[in-house]
Length: 110
Picture: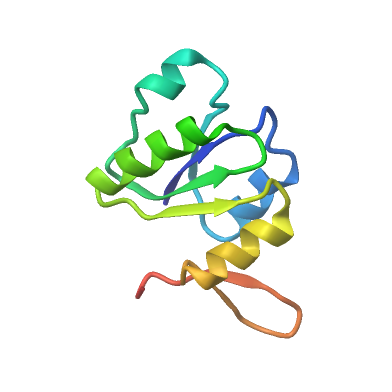
């Protein structure tokens, strides 16, 4: 599964945690460069776009949202911390809680 991440200079542990739930390809755009703000390009095969709201401006977030919407790619907005990302992915139906140990699995049915 491919995921596009927009925002943040470094992904830190979030990259490993996303890989543990089945993400095989990560495309990371910091959102700092003007070309990222003005012409967001998303691959059609992306399962979803993850936007770190605490690291990009409103105009970039809107551009990402509109581009993803036109390609019918779901967009998830979260802060750049795993607890926020996991909460938003669960709410969107992308991952399910498998056990009390909080193991995560991709839910392809939603």
